Amino acid sequence: MNYGIGFHDLELELAKEAISIAKRSELTFYDSVYVVLAKIKQGELITADEKLTKNTPKAYKKYANAL
Image 1 (cartoon, rainbow, N blue to C red):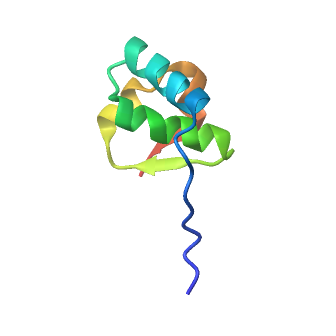
Image 2 (image 1 turned 30 degrees about the vertical axis):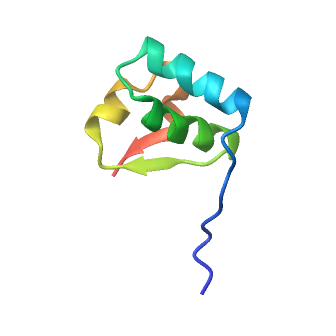
């Protein structure tokens, strides 16, 4: 079975962007990485974490959506 799960290295630019998000919001670095990955992959992060969707910076809102 193929579940469409892939891996992505934590590259320097991804890490820098995630740190920037974490610094200016109430998101953790960990959560910010998922938001940046959604942006890079032109995908969507669907989460039950209300804090994550509420605190995602405006420029990234389209990538982080509540269940």
